[in-house]
Length: 171
Image (tube, rainbow, N blue to C red; front, side):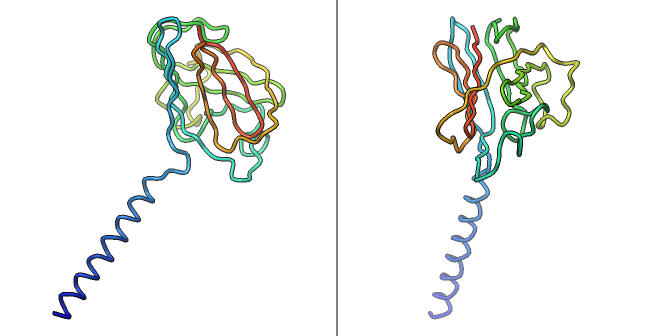
């Protein structure tokens, strides 16, 4: 009887440890996120991974100024359009694209790249750019802990993290 109780207790303990390990493995440091909107009949989807600030210097630190950035974490951020649209100053055909940026102190360059299946910006190839345009930065009073990309019903795409925001429009 005592042996059965001991075996049952050990089995329960092992099951609890395995469940805890499995749950921990599912929580990513930079979880995947999706922003969606429909603007003028065009479905817009942006898939990205959302890193956290965690007390780090972000722009000019973790994310260097004047270098191509994946605009999030993990895989390259993607922009998918169900119909042709105007993205910032660019005419972009329906399809799925990588969305890269080049952060600067007072302005960023937004890049739409035809290779949507990339890990980060390690294999970024400028020759595959659909185009680029520049946007101004806005300084925020509050610190945004988790990187986010939001799309309003009017098609305004906001990229926010730390105390920086940049915006562009998709029509």
